[in-house]
Amino acid sequence: MAEAAFHTWRAGPFDLALGRPLVMGILNVTPDSFSDGGAHDRIDLAIEHARRMLDEGADIIDVGGESTRPGAAEVSLEQEIERVLPVLSQLTTMGVPVSVDTRHVEVAEACVEAGACIINDVSGFRDEAMVKLAARHDVGVVIMHMLGEPGTMQADPVYTDVVAEVGEFLDSSVMSLTAAGVSRQRICIDPGIGFGKTLEHNLQLLRGIDEFATRGFPVLIGASRKRMIGEALGIDDPGDRLEGSLAVAAWSVTHGARIIRAHDVRETVRVVRMTARIASN
Ligand code: HH2
Image (cartoon, rainbow, N blue to C red):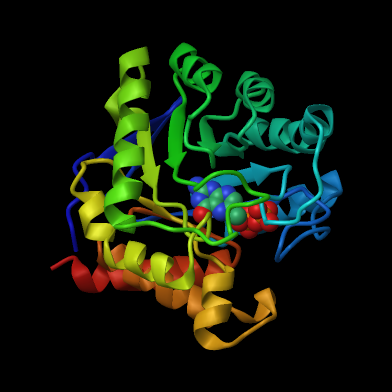
């Protein structure tokens, strides 16, 4: 197992220990996310689900109000804020690390002001305003790679060397964040499984995790229930992709990933803890 260069990931008031892999529980407060759309789009249901994930061992709750699957409905900024803010505010008062999954600076800003300790930006801090926001606050950041935009990203994605190209993108985002004043201890990188990638690209990225990990930042992998698993195993129903998701989680932590973003927290926590235990020789 590759060594994490940092022992902790700094995220606002939290120093998240990276001695064991962390699990980020997914809380989509959307009507149309690809696997759990509509399941938690009422505040009470969302909080109940977050509590369940925390009981099951989630280290971070990732709240998102916009589905980024291709074909998802457009959401206005006001709508996205209306969806995430009440849930996120309530969770932050519980003293748990909460990240906001958004590519919109206005949403990120409202959530950081309400206590979100991580900005999880699936567009990888391409927006200078998002970089400046991160620099103004002491939050953790997840830089994720996405090819193009959600609506069109799966239309024939092409790379010459996907691991190298995704790595170059992440490096350049790291540079703009650190140049703006974000300390390296606050940065986490994510190759963006399924974001403008074919099945083969996703497999290559998973084979390349060690290479991302050698950059010295914690690596996050989010493959939970994704289409790549459906394609690899011939399973259409995202709810039936648990075993494939767990296989990716075990592979990822073995190869140096430190954070796994997951829908099925109980099972994922058990798998990553067991895998890490075997590796901790
Ligand atoms: N994947 C999704 C959303 N946010 N963030 C990071 N850092 N990494 C990921 O791989 C990632 C992410 C997409 O999955 P999901 O939230 O389950 O679906 P949807 O976009 O349909 O809401």
